[in-house]
Length: 332
Image 1: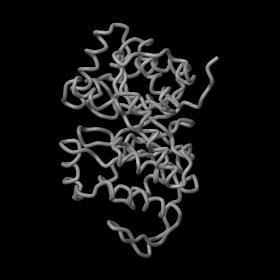
Image 2: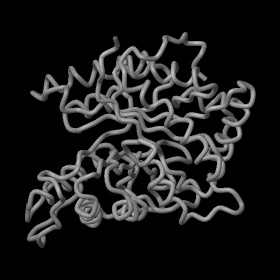
Image 3: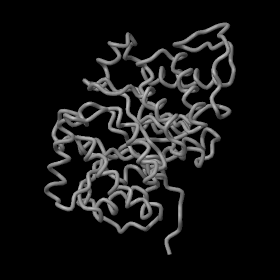
């Protein structure tokens, strides 16, 4: 009998206009979150980007804080450089309070090319040393949440700060890091409460966890203090050709690139229920314990249908070894 482990299955809300059909009402995203919670998803995540028009991430989480009751509310991933750091600390603490301590904050520093550097220009923040700036921003948040009146860092210096809003939980919400470079793995082990990457190969995920564990041990931290999460894009369709065609449309609409290129950098799974169960099971076998699933559908009706099909797999994914093994060639 397979042993039971605490695997959380979350879903990314389709907050971007590229995922809405012509007649969709973005206010239905609140109902989508409520429905996902009833279906058994243990977390509701939103992403943060300027790639296309979308509902702003923290605004969406504030709405979900008041309309849901049990699901973790997360960012996948928040881009702190888009906002002033003290203001962001206030917003995050407020969401954590309003949700009763259900917030998890995954952060990232952006990417080269059109997915990152232009956003820094719009935010009037320099691109160089962006990772150090990210680490210091998180350190500032934690100091504010602990009641600090002063903060002196490389990028931010504040004296006589007024009392900050305290989060629901002492120490504030857990902060996860996105990214899988060697430097990101080391920083995760030393500083962060979780890891949210999207590697195309489960073997790379397992190797990343080992590196994080070593960095944590070197820093005197327990490896189990770091949540091993995973971000992946899934489309379920009994017809394999239709699954790939649907995912191709989704990736092109969302990122403006072909699926073949996208698959080289992000975890993507498309196919039947059995295929998806097995493919995602390989990541669980590699150590993933909190899955954040983005549904590859381009309107809210299809998002609902995909979430219902995905929810049927939750019991299987909560069992280590419960999913059959799958060859590398089976990963879509």
